[in-house]
Image (tube, rainbow, N blue to C red):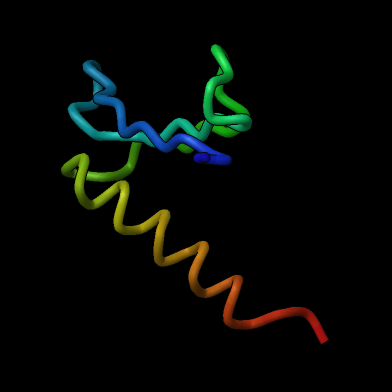
Length: 61
């Protein structure tokens, strides 16, 4: 069962993509929305995955 849902969206005025994160996955409204700063949807998803992986691999001391 998915705990979050990640959806890249195109910001028409800027032509850039942003990411909406839904928690729980079936929520109707996003829990977090990033600023539009990515050139492609894939870049938006990859950056978010990299951020999560970095945080998971570097716990607070």
